[in-house]
Every structure is written in C-alpha cells, then in structure tokens.
Length: 114
Image (cartoon, rainbow, N blue to C red; front, top):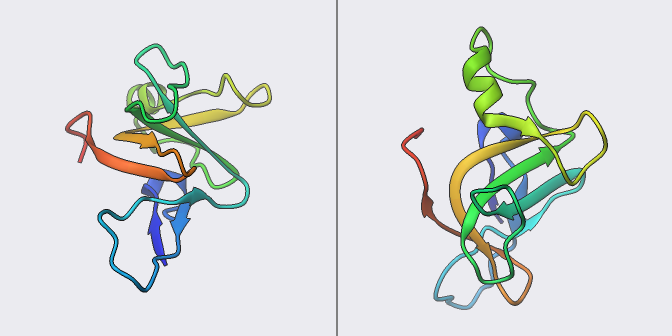
C-alpha cells in the first residue's frame, strides 16, 4: 500500500494499493475516511480533472497549526470553502492533479517549504 500525507494532516491521508504488475507511475491514490482532498488553482478554486494545481487537505486528522508560529499557521491553514463553517484546509505546497480514473497524482512541489 502506497500512502501519502504531510505531517500537518495525520501523515497518511491518501492511499493506493499497488498492483502486482508493473505500472508507469504510482499515483497517490484516494482520500482515506474522514479526509477531504482538493486540487485548487491559485485563487483556491477546484481545477478540472487532468489539470495541475495545489493539493489541499482537510478533515478529522488536520493539525491545529504550528506551535508558536501564528503567521505560518495563517498562511498554510486556510478556511475550507468546501466544508462546514469553521473547518480548514492545509495548503500542502504539493503540485497534483486528478487522473481520469479518479486517482490523485503527485507532480512535484510548488514551493520550497520542504
């Protein structure tokens, strides 16, 4: 099982069971239970399938922020426009896209946080 997730979101928020046969690329997979995953453009709007954008993660496993770093917390943990009032998303800085088969694919970094 291939798992993806940043420390800020419970470490394993997307999973994919790898097939026994060879594959061209290994996608990140599908969100696990109680996890929200979005690929958004610079304005925070969802992008169409196949279009690259920033991966944002939310849900039950999301951290509250960075201890003693309110500025960084405000930059990375943003209001969730797709969820209930008061919920947040973590802007991962990862570049991703949804594939036609419904799996999430990692494409690299958008920033230099890592």
